[in-house]
Image (cartoon, rainbow, N blue to C red; front, side):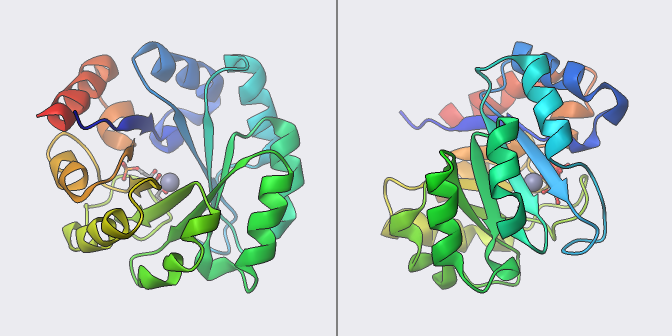
Length: 218
Ligand code: DX5
Ligand code: ZN
């Protein structure tokens, strides 16, 4: 059977309660937590950095997987601080670095898993040369920067192409994914599914996560 993990993005939750929100998502059946780091430069919005991640790690304990989505201009700068703060995986944007190879190596040496993300305007072939060296490819299905945007179905060919070329690579989709759009992602071969506003903005996150898992299994 097809399996995929659901990682809520807590970006659109009450940020004054972020630790509690992370705990709540795990209690509601989340497989991992997708944490969106924005620096106001790579994207036109600011969220939080490694000091917050350190606090969240203390709040949720050692087990939850922290998938760091680094929407920052200088991803090299935060590898060690994020590893020390308790991040599990470090996903940088291909558009933000001139030397992906050395960054991949640094992330690996810091003990985290490695992810590479592309914005909607970046072609998927640019990931191909790194695919053998990374754990996960993130195909953005909105322009990064904000939660609650519309899912871009025309990104699905990127996912299917990656899946056909790299059968064992983790492939994540992020942006506008919810009960109405997740089937596109599952069919294309994504196995790590981020869902922000659809889950966190719901009155009943547990039911939405269960529904997302049901759609995947259909
Ligand atoms: C967008 C972020 C996403 C976003 C997802 O820049 O990377 O993780 O918060 O939220 P939804 O699911 O609401 O698009
Ligand atoms: Zn994200």
